[in-house]
Amino acid sequence: MTLELDTRQRAMLMEMGVHVWLPESGVAILKAPAALAPQRTAAAPLRAAVAQPVAPVAPVASVAATRAAPSVATDAVAPPAASPDWATLSGTVRACQACGLCAGRQHTTLLAPAEPLLTCDWMVVGDVPDEDEDHAGAPFAGADGLLLANMLRALGLQRANPLPSAAPVAGNAAPALRAYVSNVLKCHPARGAMVQAAELAQCAGYLQREIALVQPKLILSMGRFANQLLLGETPEQAALPLGKLRGTLHRYQGVPVVVTYHPKTLMRNSADKAKAWADLCLAATKLET
Image (tube, rainbow, N blue to C red):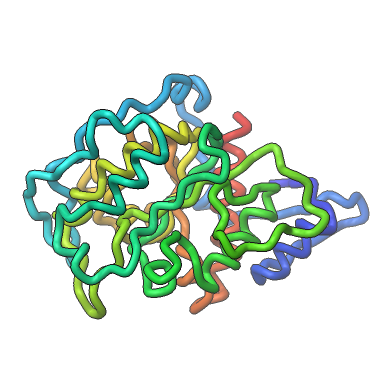
């Protein structure tokens, strides 16, 4: 795979720990493992597949079983039908007490875009909120958020819903593409508590409303629980380890999904950063087709 990278983008890759070979031509050469090569299918172009806005629907009644979190049937409560805007949806999430996670939270983590009417080509769905996100009331609010920002900037992207404390990036003009960032759950589980499938199903309706408002052309799924929900239409597939889900185009509610590592995982195991970059290149390639 070849990409035209400027000095800033190469610096972002170095920050991620990804080394890029730059020949005399100035065109960066990045080669993903053969197992990651995307397979051509007879499916219609991606843009046509998501040309119509995603219709908000009721959340799923259950989520695929995994070894860590068995499937639990639940009467999940969808957001009110009259939730056409970010202000209404944000207020509904803040007041939500539909499951036991509300008892231990400081804040919910749904953070509306800086421009409420903005739609985004990219949407990033992270795993369960941690203590930093619970305290900030926003997804990817800690060191993992800084790494995610570098990953996005390497592709010419920036967050559509930046952290309130985030400083503008010097010399970085507004890119053509933005990424809306969210969590699969909106509340931080109590310390040591295992996330239940019923809780994932309960929050699924909020994620569906976010997708309907953002209208992404591609979703980047980061983390085991994000994969469990987004790929739950095929339970056997959702239960596979992340390594077997990478390099393949999946779909959620008709929107293409690319699976990759959560930034927290990359901070613990820097050897996976090159794999994560290959996943981002795969996603960028799919958007261009």
